[in-house]
Image 1 (spheres, rainbow, N blue to C red):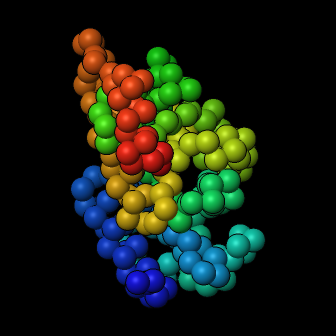
Image 2: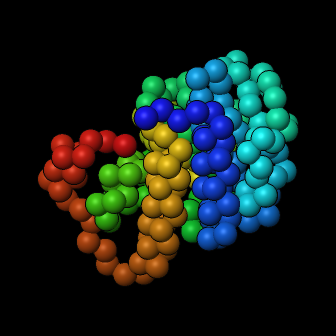
Image 3: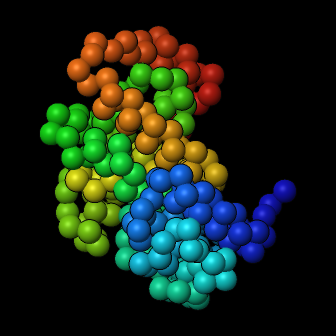
Length: 213
């Protein structure tokens, strides 16, 4: 059953509060958006995710123009880049979560494959994650760099900044962002230990059974 816009606003409020309460977002860091019929709903700029109010969520049209609600996040271009390059994208979550951000700062993180395939769930929910080169927060070039990936990745790490994760709907985008953060924590915990990665055959089996994110 298709949600009404008001139901989507309420779900967005609930999930954003949950992300904040569980430590995936601190202060006013992070922003979330979800696609609706006539545009996007987006968390407002300089708003703590636990203080989101359904009727004050920003709304922008498909051209990025502010329609109603509070002023949208200054990083709306990160979100628009995913909507414009991934036909299946229905929601985007950008966080400064601790472990994924740590990976985005580590000089030995592989920019072509930031999250090694060490569990089936990161493969199923997140897929391959690439690093987007550093630009200052609010710089629209970050959106252009995501555009250059041509929709190949459902999630990226912004260098020295944090993760941006897309999903077919809001709940799946939040689930994927959480999975990425927990896997980043595992990667950092296992840094000095030999690691058993999933094999090419095991990855193929997952993609055939569950599909790519």
